[in-house]
Image 1 (cartoon, rainbow, N blue to C red):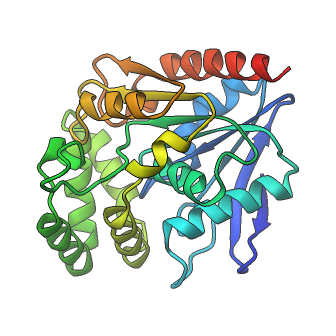
Image 2: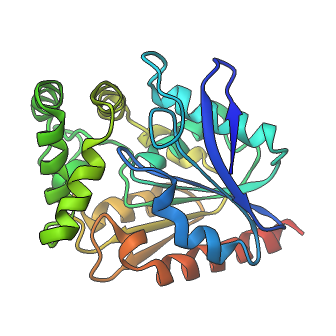
Length: 275
């Protein structure tokens, strides 16, 4: 376990394990590096695996500024540079996928051998030109404004509602633990980064991603439809789409065995091409 200080002075908590080509795994909004902990341990038998807490999350530093996707992607680039990672597969779940998209927008595929996206859309807000965003096409700009207002008014209540939405099967103690965990997050950080996500639109950069991509989705996801994953598969030149049967947005937790196998096979293919 270690900390890295970004160029704007924020300490990021990270863990690394294993040797070989690098895999960097990036958690989503309101979560932390522990979402990838089973992949971290399993894949480190063959690869050098890095997980970290994005700013404002987990054990990383909190800040009242620079809570943008541009800064999250810059944090990723600086972390990779500090660890002397020059050719990595980076994988992002949920907002971590947005971090991957933003990295591609800012830096192209510099330093990348491949990317993985877990149940994420290139555009959260739906409108007349787009119906593959949040809540299976039913989340509009007006809904986003309402969400932000509720986060500002009562973050623990809104966080609990989000937990119930993404994992409607949670009951009893499991639900209580998840609600307590999400409630610990800083409301300002959550609101600022939600705003960053709803403003983003990465559709135009998808054809410019010139490294292999793995697109995984939960076929029971209450957030995104399978068609969202297939859209990514069609618009990123070298992409494979992998369904996680009977999984929700929490696919990497619900079926870690498949996540480990999928990322492992993808990394093996990608890195073998680099030799």
